[in-house]
Length: 146
Image 1 (cartoon, rainbow, N blue to C red):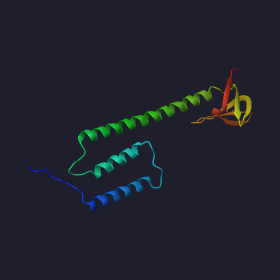
Image 2 (cartoon, rainbow, N blue to C red; image 1 turned 90 degrees about the horizontal axis):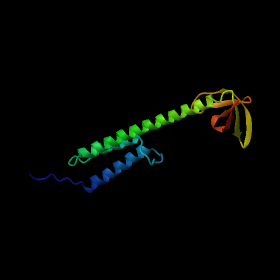
Image 3 (cartoon, helix red, strand yellow; image 1 turned 45 degrees about the vertical axis):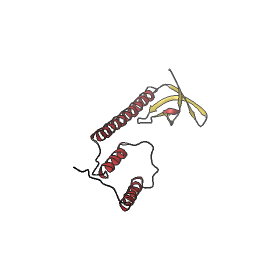
Image 4 (cartoon, rainbow, N blue to C red; image 1 turned 90 degrees about the vertical axis):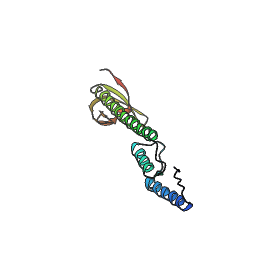
């Protein structure tokens, strides 16, 4: 049997380059390209690669399995990062809540303020009510035992 030879003509090669350029412009839509691929960019790249592959030389099974494993790893890492961010928020909220009724020292615009925490707001960035004003928890530098 003879092997099937497939070679693109210069016109086909130019058309392919123009198509890839057009796709890249649509993909980035005036945005600055990112250095790290997210899940959506990875899937877009994989689907583009699959839809534009040479039919006479399809992607090897090993390559495809490897890329799917990379996608799975990326999803797991993204999930872990989100879990760690949520855990950090919970620790911060707990720390702020434990200051309720205690004396604190905080900095605001290079000015040291001291007072007792009368209230604590919830959320990713908790605030404490000191001397009638709310301050970000990260402004608190010291917590004193009552």
